[in-house]
Length: 225
Image (cartoon, rainbow, N blue to C red):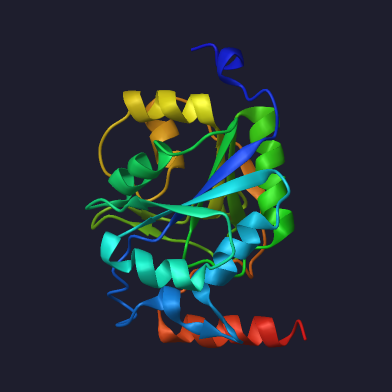
């Protein structure tokens, strides 16, 4: 395909905050957890909107939580889309409400993302059409499938994070031409043969999954004071 015709004309962006998870491993709604005076969802939303390019935020969440989340996000330029049964459906629902040249997709449970990471991701999406925030793997990784076992070269491995930013027109094309389950949006681009651009981010941009992650996030935030 000719990527040039799908490239963004400006850095004007809108963001999707994915908040449809059930927090099963946490055992409670992690988006409402207080982190040094602010809820997780509030910190995630404020971080996205700290980027001057992002003018609007669509929160993909179950309708029964819209009132609760809207109270947490009071004063911010947000609207809501219904979360689907899985992440792909949630993102598709939210994307229908997106305007702008670039769409930025971020996990609601990543409250420590920095303005620089968001801005860098938008900038790379403007230049390359795609941006996936990742960090180089620190550990040696061993692949094992029950038979074959080996250590892939560590300098070629990255941990995938969010935000992930894309030309809105290009993302619309990918949504129409890719299918199946995925855990992050860049996998859709793999399916249609487009290599996503890697934007190197920060190791502090953690996702709240277990109680240990909450303690780590609070230590990071305390260090900012």
